[in-house]
Structures are given as C-alpha cells and as structure tokens.
Picture 1: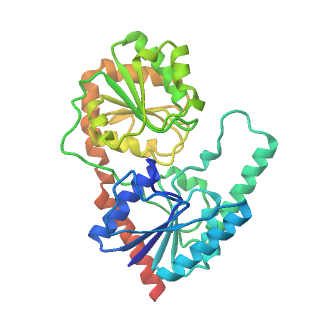
Picture 2: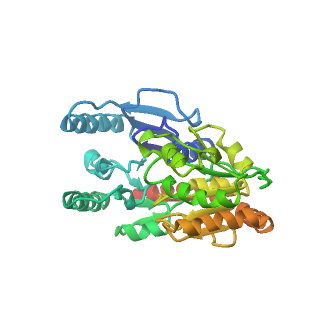
Picture 3: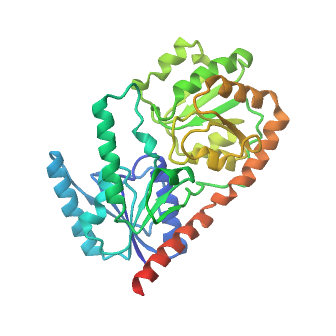
Length: 369
C-alpha cells in the first residue's frame, strides 16, 4: 500500500514529528507500506527524530506573498501526488490550509485528516478583541467546511470528539515513544516538565506553584526541557519569585528518556493540549504525573489518585499541594508509579499501528468494492 503523509515540516523536536517518526516507521518496517512524506519549505535533510530508511521524502517550495505561496503549494502538491499515485493520503497539518487539501487535489484516493491539536489552540494570551473573535469564528467555519471532504477525521482524545461534528470521526491516540524494561527509582529529588516555552504550556502557572513547593521542600529541583523563548520571560519570573536556584531550563535533548528515568514526579501545567504524549512517556518509566485537567488529553491518560493526579485547570494552589503530596508520600508516589507503567501499555506502538492499518485497509477495500 502506498501511503502519503502531507505535513509542514518534520525536522523539528515537536510532538507531531515524534509521533510521525514512530508510526510511519512502524508501518514501513512491519507492515511493508510504501511511505512517502511531503513537506513544505523544508530545506534540510537533517531530522531531529529517527525515521525508517524505507521512507521517501518530497518537498514543496512555496515562497512569496500569500497568494503566490498558496498557488505554488497547490501546484507542487498536485504534481507530486500525480507522480506518486498513492492508495491513501493522510494530512497532518493543523493549519487552515490542511482542511482544503482534498479540494486542492480533487481527492485522487481516500483521504484522512489527523488533528493533532485542540481547537483551544486559538486561545491566546490576553484579552481578544471583537475582530479577533470574529476572525476565529470565520476560521472555524472554514475548518468545518473543508473537513467534511475527508473520508475520516482522526482526533487524539475522547474530549476532542466534542469539538467537531463530522460523521466519520474516530479517536486514535498517539503511540508511546518507548516502553523500557527499566523504570525510575523515584528516589531522586527531581521534578520534570517537557515542552517548549509558550502560553499553551502554562509554565508561568507551574512556576507559581513551584514557589509554594520549595517553601516546604527547598532541596528539590524542577527541570524544564524544551525550546526556550525569552519572550515568555520564564527566567525573569523565576528570579522575581526567588525560585531561580531550584529551577533549570534546558533546550530539547534527544536523550529525553534518560531525564524521565532520573525524575520522581512529572508535571504538566498546560492550559490546553492535543494529547499530552509527555505524560505517557513519563508513565512508561513508572513516573507518577500531576497535570491540570485541561482540554484535552490528561483525563484520557491519567486515572486520578490511582496512577497520577488531575487538578482543576488553573488551580495553582491545588497543583502545588499535589506536588507536595507526592513529595511527602513516598509509598503513594511509588505505588502510583507502578500503576502508571501498567496503564500506558495500551499506547504501545504495535497497538496503535494496528489501529491505523485497520483503518487504511478498510478504506482501500471499501473503495475497491
């Protein structure tokens, strides 16, 4: 089966890139799919994550003003698709143009859209003007219009089902990046968070919670790994809160698995999420997680007070109390960690890859009837 993924870029350290590297490689290596990835304006062959050597890559260059870019993108896309003649096309583009790929291509084969973020991604920092609210409404209307042309619309969580009204909508979660035999001892006085500095990730909320934590446990440290943005002002906030000595900001690293294994608690302070793959990664190492119950993902992954803690979204004091509880209750921390490692087995790559294979097979078989 010839499967084409249409994306923006796959050279970065983001979640979409990691997920694609796992599932595309699995389908190529173990299901013998002929996989092609089409990128947009990706000028490098160096990829952050490891992809199967069996995967082929194509790039569309589209520069200039918005109209010129769109014209060149559409022309380049049609040319490559005509050359490849795929059996299935999967679009992994959370931008507006992704919703219109079936119209651009004329649907040469069954097409699937993969939504990797919540519609809450439109929530921005600060008060939104009337014009921006109207613009968002128009954008959602265009998404609803374009999305109905797909044969299947895939979301990551049960909560995401409520954001769309398409008939053929299905949940397929992200696969685990790894499931090691070893697990964290949960003895190190380290708390971990992973993700880029952004309004979405809510690190300002985490830092305000952390101030309460170290007042009781000044010997613990918080390590945050992710693309650093000075605009977010997290280092400045840490200094203002007088907690800078207990926080470390690190850029993305390829050996993030080692950091999970070294930590004793994982924190996710996001205002909204597409899934929360970092939670499943931490749990794979037997690390209990504490997360705001944000839209969407954490409530699908964490069973509250069993294998982790879910906190009302935005309750900074409760988040701090949750971290303190896990620090002070070693036995509970370790029992949650054991349960967490078992719970995330449902996200094993072989399980998720089979779900995709069944979907692709059913679509192609239906077309042949």
